[in-house]
Amino acid sequence: MRAAAGNLKRVSLELGGKSPNIVLADADADADADADADADADIDAAIAGASLGIFYNQGEVCSAGSRLYVHESQFDRVVDGIAEQARSINVGYGMDPGTQMGPLVSAEQRDRVGRYLENNRAGGGRAVAGGSVLERPGYFVEPTVIADPDPDHPVVREEIFGPVVAALPFSDLDDLARQANDTVYGLAAGVWTGTCPRRTRWRSG
Image 1: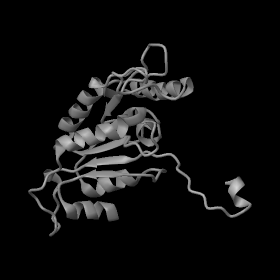
Image 2 (image 1 turned 90 degrees about the horizontal axis):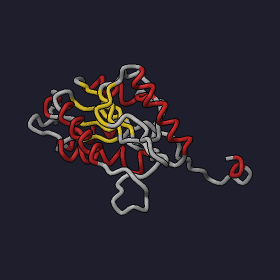
Image 3 (image 1 turned 30 degrees about the vertical axis):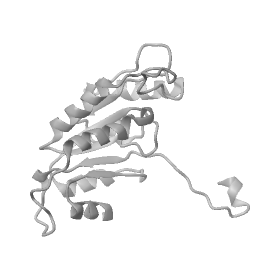
């Protein structure tokens, strides 16, 4: 910014994020006239999309979907599905053709992510998949799914910048909106639903 200030060049900054990925379900259809009570999110597509959203590029993406909010009626199914995807990922060296997820960018970043995982364990957090730094040469971390952590825990509040997703259930749409927006970041968000009116409603805030 200092370099651009002298000649008034436009600057676009891509900063950090703690982006929410939201999975709605037919059980949360509200009383709006435009809500289709028979509509449901394609849960299998949501599982695949949420997995890609956090594990792509080892989670080292500013807009990664690192917070996952799932309606309580689908919570176990979605979390189990993402955990299954996480356990199936082949973590290894980038030049190995069988590798699906490579190392983090540095030892410093590996250790930073490891501290979040240790903090989660020490606080009684439940990792249903992964949860550890891999004990091998290189900067490898297990694809990790943390289920129902304390909403104020650092794994929910802070950008980890690694393959770690915090999944939380919800029942009330207004409370969900409050939780999704309760962040110092403002980079991205995703909503999985089967109805266009609900997509429009959530996009417009």
